[in-house]
Length: 402
Image (cartoon, rainbow, N blue to C red):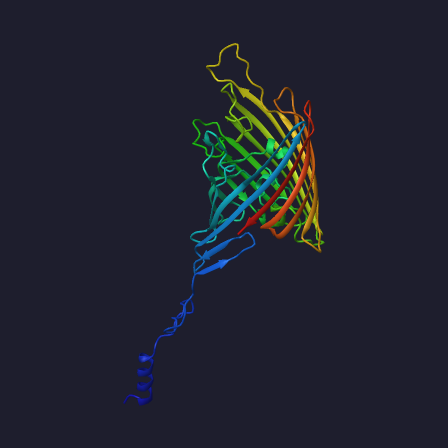
Protein backbone atom coordinates (compact mmCIF):
# COMPACT_ATOMS: atom_id res chain seq x y z
CA UNK A 1 0.00 0.00 0.00
CA UNK A 2 1.48 3.39 -0.92
CA UNK A 3 2.82 5.52 1.88
CA UNK A 4 0.38 8.49 2.36
CA UNK A 5 3.24 10.80 3.36
CA UNK A 6 5.12 10.06 0.11
CA UNK A 7 1.99 10.76 -1.96
CA UNK A 8 1.50 14.13 -0.25
CA UNK A 9 5.16 15.08 -0.81
CA UNK A 10 4.99 14.17 -4.51
CA UNK A 11 1.85 16.26 -5.01
CA UNK A 12 3.45 19.26 -3.32
CA UNK A 13 6.53 18.97 -5.52
CA UNK A 14 4.48 18.83 -8.73
CA UNK A 15 2.39 21.86 -7.80
CA UNK A 16 5.31 24.06 -6.64
CA UNK A 17 6.71 26.85 -8.89
CA UNK A 18 10.16 25.90 -10.27
CA UNK A 19 13.01 27.98 -8.90
CA UNK A 20 14.11 30.75 -11.26
CA UNK A 21 17.56 30.39 -12.80
CA UNK A 22 20.13 32.63 -11.18
CA UNK A 23 20.89 34.36 -14.48
CA UNK A 24 17.25 35.17 -15.21
CA UNK A 25 16.17 38.61 -13.93
CA UNK A 26 13.28 38.67 -11.51
CA UNK A 27 10.05 40.15 -12.80
CA UNK A 28 9.27 43.57 -11.32
CA UNK A 29 6.49 43.83 -8.82
CA UNK A 30 3.22 45.12 -10.31
CA UNK A 31 3.31 48.93 -10.30
CA UNK A 32 7.00 49.13 -9.33
CA UNK A 33 9.11 51.64 -11.37
CA UNK A 34 11.60 50.07 -13.80
CA UNK A 35 14.90 51.49 -15.06
CA UNK A 36 14.46 54.79 -16.90
CA UNK A 37 16.36 56.81 -19.49
CA UNK A 38 18.58 59.53 -18.04
CA UNK A 39 18.67 63.16 -19.11
CA UNK A 40 21.48 65.17 -17.52
CA UNK A 41 22.48 68.81 -17.67
CA UNK A 42 26.18 68.17 -17.29
CA UNK A 43 27.35 71.79 -17.58
CA UNK A 44 30.96 72.94 -17.39
CA UNK A 45 31.27 72.84 -21.17
CA UNK A 46 29.97 69.27 -21.42
CA UNK A 47 26.43 70.35 -22.31
CA UNK A 48 23.44 68.07 -21.91
CA UNK A 49 23.28 64.30 -22.31
CA UNK A 50 20.57 61.73 -22.82
CA UNK A 51 21.41 58.09 -22.03
CA UNK A 52 19.11 55.11 -22.53
CA UNK A 53 18.13 52.97 -19.55
CA UNK A 54 20.36 50.10 -20.67
CA UNK A 55 23.21 52.55 -21.53
CA UNK A 56 23.36 51.20 -25.06
CA UNK A 57 22.70 54.64 -26.57
CA UNK A 58 23.89 58.10 -25.62
CA UNK A 59 23.38 61.52 -27.21
CA UNK A 60 25.31 64.57 -26.00
CA UNK A 61 24.92 68.17 -27.15
CA UNK A 62 27.27 71.09 -26.45
CA UNK A 63 27.33 74.72 -27.61
CA UNK A 64 30.31 77.08 -27.68
CA UNK A 65 30.82 80.64 -28.88
CA UNK A 66 33.74 83.09 -28.83
CA UNK A 67 33.28 86.87 -29.02
CA UNK A 68 36.52 88.64 -29.95
CA UNK A 69 37.69 92.24 -30.12
CA UNK A 70 40.98 92.91 -31.94
CA UNK A 71 43.04 96.09 -32.26
CA UNK A 72 46.19 95.98 -34.40
CA UNK A 73 48.83 98.47 -35.48
CA UNK A 74 51.54 97.99 -38.11
CA UNK A 75 53.52 101.06 -39.02
CA UNK A 76 51.03 103.81 -39.82
CA UNK A 77 48.17 101.36 -40.40
CA UNK A 78 45.70 100.66 -37.59
CA UNK A 79 42.46 98.71 -37.55
CA UNK A 80 40.01 97.12 -35.16
CA UNK A 81 37.32 94.46 -35.38
CA UNK A 82 34.58 92.89 -33.28
CA UNK A 83 33.26 89.53 -34.39
CA UNK A 84 31.95 86.12 -33.42
CA UNK A 85 35.18 84.23 -34.00
CA UNK A 86 33.73 80.76 -33.48
CA UNK A 87 30.22 79.39 -33.02
CA UNK A 88 30.21 75.63 -32.59
CA UNK A 89 27.51 73.00 -32.18
CA UNK A 90 28.72 69.51 -31.24
CA UNK A 91 26.98 66.20 -30.68
CA UNK A 92 28.85 63.16 -29.38
CA UNK A 93 27.95 59.85 -27.78
CA UNK A 94 27.66 56.16 -28.59
CA UNK A 95 25.27 53.71 -30.23
CA UNK A 96 24.84 49.97 -29.59
CA UNK A 97 27.22 50.23 -26.63
CA UNK A 98 30.02 52.47 -25.42
CA UNK A 99 32.53 50.90 -27.82
CA UNK A 100 30.82 52.37 -30.90
CA UNK A 101 31.31 56.13 -30.58
CA UNK A 102 30.52 59.06 -32.86
CA UNK A 103 31.01 62.82 -33.05
CA UNK A 104 29.43 65.54 -35.16
CA UNK A 105 30.63 69.15 -34.98
CA UNK A 106 29.40 72.14 -36.97
CA UNK A 107 31.06 75.55 -37.35
CA UNK A 108 28.41 78.21 -37.83
CA UNK A 109 30.21 81.57 -37.63
CA UNK A 110 31.27 83.47 -40.79
CA UNK A 111 34.95 82.77 -39.96
CA UNK A 112 34.18 79.08 -39.42
CA UNK A 113 32.82 78.90 -42.96
CA UNK A 114 35.44 81.22 -44.51
CA UNK A 115 32.80 83.68 -45.64
CA UNK A 116 33.91 86.30 -48.19
CA UNK A 117 32.17 88.74 -50.51
CA UNK A 118 31.83 85.86 -52.98
CA UNK A 119 30.17 83.54 -50.48
CA UNK A 120 31.31 80.84 -48.08
CA UNK A 121 34.40 78.73 -48.87
CA UNK A 122 33.37 75.83 -46.63
CA UNK A 123 30.29 73.99 -45.51
CA UNK A 124 29.48 74.12 -41.77
CA UNK A 125 30.69 70.51 -41.36
CA UNK A 126 33.83 70.29 -39.21
CA UNK A 127 33.77 66.75 -37.79
CA UNK A 128 31.75 63.67 -38.59
CA UNK A 129 33.36 60.40 -37.61
CA UNK A 130 32.81 57.01 -35.96
CA UNK A 131 35.14 55.15 -33.62
CA UNK A 132 35.09 51.39 -33.11
CA UNK A 133 36.77 50.97 -29.72
CA UNK A 134 36.17 47.28 -29.00
CA UNK A 135 39.91 46.63 -28.75
CA UNK A 136 42.08 48.68 -26.42
CA UNK A 137 45.14 48.50 -28.67
CA UNK A 138 43.33 48.77 -32.00
CA UNK A 139 40.64 51.45 -32.11
CA UNK A 140 39.43 52.31 -35.61
CA UNK A 141 38.31 55.85 -36.55
CA UNK A 142 36.61 56.62 -39.87
CA UNK A 143 35.38 59.99 -41.11
CA UNK A 144 36.32 63.67 -41.20
CA UNK A 145 38.20 65.02 -38.18
CA UNK A 146 41.46 66.66 -37.11
CA UNK A 147 44.47 64.57 -38.07
CA UNK A 148 46.39 63.38 -34.98
CA UNK A 149 49.57 65.20 -36.01
CA UNK A 150 50.21 68.27 -33.83
CA UNK A 151 49.31 68.51 -30.13
CA UNK A 152 48.09 72.11 -30.15
CA UNK A 153 46.04 71.49 -33.30
CA UNK A 154 44.30 68.49 -31.77
CA UNK A 155 43.61 70.50 -28.62
CA UNK A 156 40.29 72.31 -28.99
CA UNK A 157 40.34 76.00 -29.87
CA UNK A 158 38.26 76.44 -26.73
CA UNK A 159 40.92 74.89 -24.47
CA UNK A 160 43.86 77.21 -25.22
CA UNK A 161 45.78 79.55 -22.91
CA UNK A 162 46.02 82.20 -25.62
CA UNK A 163 43.20 83.52 -27.77
CA UNK A 164 44.49 81.39 -30.67
CA UNK A 165 47.30 79.04 -31.70
CA UNK A 166 50.84 80.14 -32.55
CA UNK A 167 52.10 81.33 -35.94
CA UNK A 168 54.25 78.19 -36.19
CA UNK A 169 51.23 75.95 -35.81
CA UNK A 170 49.24 78.09 -38.25
CA UNK A 171 51.91 77.60 -40.94
CA UNK A 172 52.88 73.95 -40.48
CA UNK A 173 49.97 72.07 -38.94
CA UNK A 174 47.84 69.54 -40.83
CA UNK A 175 44.15 70.29 -40.54
CA UNK A 176 40.94 68.32 -40.85
CA UNK A 177 40.56 65.72 -43.58
CA UNK A 178 38.68 62.53 -44.38
CA UNK A 179 40.80 59.76 -42.90
CA UNK A 180 40.92 56.16 -41.74
CA UNK A 181 43.24 55.53 -38.84
CA UNK A 182 44.11 53.08 -36.08
CA UNK A 183 44.89 54.30 -32.58
CA UNK A 184 45.24 53.33 -28.95
CA UNK A 185 44.79 55.63 -25.96
CA UNK A 186 46.61 53.16 -23.69
CA UNK A 187 48.82 50.90 -25.79
CA UNK A 188 49.47 47.49 -24.17
CA UNK A 189 47.65 48.69 -21.04
CA UNK A 190 50.89 50.05 -19.55
CA UNK A 191 49.59 53.58 -18.96
CA UNK A 192 52.66 54.93 -20.77
CA UNK A 193 52.02 55.07 -24.53
CA UNK A 194 49.54 56.14 -27.19
CA UNK A 195 49.81 55.81 -30.96
CA UNK A 196 47.94 57.03 -34.06
CA UNK A 197 48.53 55.86 -37.65
CA UNK A 198 46.47 56.09 -40.80
CA UNK A 199 45.84 57.48 -44.24
CA UNK A 200 43.85 60.49 -45.45
CA UNK A 201 42.51 61.88 -48.71
CA UNK A 202 44.85 64.88 -48.73
CA UNK A 203 42.28 67.44 -49.88
CA UNK A 204 41.49 68.90 -46.47
CA UNK A 205 38.13 70.00 -45.16
CA UNK A 206 35.15 69.51 -47.48
CA UNK A 207 37.06 66.97 -49.56
CA UNK A 208 35.11 65.79 -52.59
CA UNK A 209 37.02 62.51 -52.80
CA UNK A 210 40.42 61.66 -54.28
CA UNK A 211 40.57 61.55 -58.07
CA UNK A 212 43.62 59.25 -58.09
CA UNK A 213 45.69 57.16 -55.74
CA UNK A 214 47.71 60.13 -54.41
CA UNK A 215 46.92 60.29 -50.71
CA UNK A 216 48.48 61.19 -47.37
CA UNK A 217 49.88 59.02 -44.59
CA UNK A 218 50.66 59.90 -40.99
CA UNK A 219 51.83 58.41 -37.72
CA UNK A 220 52.17 59.81 -34.20
CA UNK A 221 53.56 58.32 -30.99
CA UNK A 222 53.05 59.76 -27.50
CA UNK A 223 54.97 58.73 -24.37
CA UNK A 224 53.93 59.41 -20.77
CA UNK A 225 56.98 58.62 -18.61
CA UNK A 226 55.15 59.60 -15.41
CA UNK A 227 51.87 57.89 -16.29
CA UNK A 228 49.11 58.30 -18.86
CA UNK A 229 47.22 61.51 -18.21
CA UNK A 230 44.34 63.22 -20.03
CA UNK A 231 45.14 66.72 -18.76
CA UNK A 232 47.41 67.31 -21.78
CA UNK A 233 44.28 67.47 -23.94
CA UNK A 234 43.83 71.07 -22.79
CA UNK A 235 46.13 73.90 -21.71
CA UNK A 236 46.44 75.38 -18.16
CA UNK A 237 46.98 73.19 -15.11
CA UNK A 238 43.61 73.14 -13.34
CA UNK A 239 44.53 69.99 -11.37
CA UNK A 240 47.40 71.84 -9.61
CA UNK A 241 48.75 68.58 -8.17
CA UNK A 242 52.36 68.22 -7.01
CA UNK A 243 52.60 65.05 -9.09
CA UNK A 244 54.21 66.13 -12.35
CA UNK A 245 52.57 65.02 -15.61
CA UNK A 246 54.73 64.80 -18.73
CA UNK A 247 53.98 64.02 -22.36
CA UNK A 248 56.61 63.61 -25.12
CA UNK A 249 55.54 63.03 -28.73
CA UNK A 250 56.73 62.88 -32.33
CA UNK A 251 54.80 62.66 -35.61
CA UNK A 252 55.47 62.32 -39.33
CA UNK A 253 53.21 62.78 -42.34
CA UNK A 254 53.72 62.41 -46.08
CA UNK A 255 51.38 63.90 -48.68
CA UNK A 256 51.53 62.57 -52.21
CA UNK A 257 50.31 65.15 -54.73
CA UNK A 258 48.82 67.73 -52.35
CA UNK A 259 46.61 70.22 -54.16
CA UNK A 260 47.12 72.99 -51.56
CA UNK A 261 50.36 74.76 -50.71
CA UNK A 262 50.19 73.85 -47.00
CA UNK A 263 49.06 70.28 -47.45
CA UNK A 264 45.46 69.89 -46.33
CA UNK A 265 44.98 73.66 -46.12
CA UNK A 266 46.10 76.89 -47.77
CA UNK A 267 45.78 78.06 -51.36
CA UNK A 268 45.97 76.16 -54.63
CA UNK A 269 49.25 77.00 -56.47
CA UNK A 270 48.79 79.37 -59.40
CA UNK A 271 50.79 77.12 -61.73
CA UNK A 272 48.15 74.40 -61.27
CA UNK A 273 50.67 71.80 -60.09
CA UNK A 274 50.70 69.58 -57.05
CA UNK A 275 53.16 69.18 -54.18
CA UNK A 276 54.69 66.16 -52.50
CA UNK A 277 55.34 66.98 -48.84
CA UNK A 278 57.34 65.54 -45.96
CA UNK A 279 56.17 66.87 -42.58
CA UNK A 280 57.58 66.22 -39.13
CA UNK A 281 56.91 67.58 -35.66
CA UNK A 282 57.90 66.99 -32.04
CA UNK A 283 56.09 68.39 -29.02
CA UNK A 284 56.14 68.17 -25.23
CA UNK A 285 53.84 69.17 -22.39
CA UNK A 286 54.60 69.36 -18.66
CA UNK A 287 52.19 70.27 -15.84
CA UNK A 288 52.76 70.51 -12.11
CA UNK A 289 51.38 72.63 -9.23
CA UNK A 290 49.66 75.15 -11.50
CA UNK A 291 52.65 75.52 -13.84
CA UNK A 292 52.23 74.45 -17.46
CA UNK A 293 55.01 74.26 -20.06
CA UNK A 294 54.51 73.48 -23.75
CA UNK A 295 56.92 73.28 -26.66
CA UNK A 296 56.61 72.23 -30.30
CA UNK A 297 58.80 72.26 -33.40
CA UNK A 298 57.86 71.74 -37.06
CA UNK A 299 59.65 70.93 -40.33
CA UNK A 300 58.40 70.70 -43.91
CA UNK A 301 60.21 69.71 -47.12
CA UNK A 302 58.41 69.77 -50.47
CA UNK A 303 58.82 68.72 -54.09
CA UNK A 304 56.68 70.54 -56.68
CA UNK A 305 55.14 68.61 -59.58
CA UNK A 306 54.16 70.76 -62.57
CA UNK A 307 51.04 69.93 -64.60
CA UNK A 308 51.62 68.20 -67.94
CA UNK A 309 50.06 71.06 -69.93
CA UNK A 310 52.30 73.75 -68.39
CA UNK A 311 53.97 75.98 -70.99
CA UNK A 312 57.70 75.19 -71.41
CA UNK A 313 58.91 78.63 -70.28
CA UNK A 314 56.56 78.92 -67.33
CA UNK A 315 58.45 78.70 -64.02
CA UNK A 316 57.34 76.14 -61.45
CA UNK A 317 56.53 77.83 -58.15
CA UNK A 318 58.59 76.93 -55.10
CA UNK A 319 57.00 74.94 -52.29
CA UNK A 320 56.59 76.22 -48.75
CA UNK A 321 59.70 74.57 -47.32
CA UNK A 322 60.50 75.72 -43.83
CA UNK A 323 60.65 75.14 -40.12
CA UNK A 324 59.28 76.77 -37.00
CA UNK A 325 58.87 76.38 -33.29
CA UNK A 326 56.77 77.58 -30.39
CA UNK A 327 57.28 77.64 -26.61
CA UNK A 328 54.90 78.82 -23.94
CA UNK A 329 54.69 78.81 -20.15
CA UNK A 330 51.85 79.64 -17.80
CA UNK A 331 51.01 79.78 -14.12
CA UNK A 332 47.48 79.40 -12.76
CA UNK A 333 47.01 81.09 -9.38
CA UNK A 334 45.49 79.07 -6.57
CA UNK A 335 43.59 81.85 -4.78
CA UNK A 336 41.78 83.15 -7.86
CA UNK A 337 41.30 81.29 -11.19
CA UNK A 338 43.59 83.74 -13.00
CA UNK A 339 46.46 82.63 -15.21
CA UNK A 340 49.45 84.50 -16.61
CA UNK A 341 51.28 83.02 -19.60
CA UNK A 342 54.01 83.91 -22.11
CA UNK A 343 54.70 82.61 -25.60
CA UNK A 344 57.43 82.94 -28.21
CA UNK A 345 57.16 81.54 -31.75
CA UNK A 346 59.24 81.68 -34.93
CA UNK A 347 58.74 80.70 -38.59
CA UNK A 348 61.69 80.32 -41.00
CA UNK A 349 61.81 79.57 -44.75
CA UNK A 350 64.16 77.05 -46.37
CA UNK A 351 65.78 77.83 -49.72
CA UNK A 352 63.55 80.16 -51.79
CA UNK A 353 60.28 79.18 -50.17
CA UNK A 354 57.57 81.90 -50.17
CA UNK A 355 57.56 82.09 -46.36
CA UNK A 356 58.56 85.27 -44.54
CA UNK A 357 60.82 84.87 -41.55
CA UNK A 358 58.67 85.88 -38.59
CA UNK A 359 59.16 86.16 -34.84
CA UNK A 360 56.27 86.67 -32.45
CA UNK A 361 56.61 87.14 -28.66
CA UNK A 362 53.47 87.60 -26.59
CA UNK A 363 51.70 87.33 -23.27
CA UNK A 364 48.21 86.69 -21.93
CA UNK A 365 46.14 86.96 -18.79
CA UNK A 366 43.14 84.64 -18.52
CA UNK A 367 40.27 84.67 -16.03
CA UNK A 368 38.64 81.25 -15.82
CA UNK A 369 35.16 81.71 -14.38
CA UNK A 370 34.33 78.05 -15.10
CA UNK A 371 37.63 76.65 -16.34
CA UNK A 372 37.68 76.73 -20.16
CA UNK A 373 33.88 76.61 -20.38
CA UNK A 374 33.46 80.26 -19.37
CA UNK A 375 36.54 82.47 -19.52
CA UNK A 376 37.82 85.92 -20.43
CA UNK A 377 41.25 86.32 -22.08
CA UNK A 378 43.33 89.36 -22.92
CA UNK A 379 46.48 88.74 -24.94
CA UNK A 380 49.12 90.80 -26.74
CA UNK A 381 51.80 89.90 -29.25
CA UNK A 382 54.34 91.72 -31.36
CA UNK A 383 55.12 90.55 -34.90
CA UNK A 384 58.64 91.02 -36.25
CA UNK A 385 59.10 90.33 -39.98
CA UNK A 386 61.96 91.01 -42.35
CA UNK A 387 61.48 94.21 -44.39
CA UNK A 388 58.21 95.03 -42.61
CA UNK A 389 57.22 97.46 -39.84
CA UNK A 390 56.86 96.10 -36.33
CA UNK A 391 53.30 94.91 -35.70
CA UNK A 392 51.33 95.03 -32.46
CA UNK A 393 48.03 93.27 -31.74
CA UNK A 394 45.76 93.16 -28.69
CA UNK A 395 42.87 90.70 -28.48
CA UNK A 396 40.11 90.46 -25.90
CA UNK A 397 37.96 87.33 -26.09
CA UNK A 398 35.04 85.99 -24.08
CA UNK A 399 34.09 82.34 -24.41
CA UNK A 400 30.88 80.77 -23.21
CA UNK A 401 30.11 77.05 -23.42
CA UNK A 402 27.19 74.88 -22.42
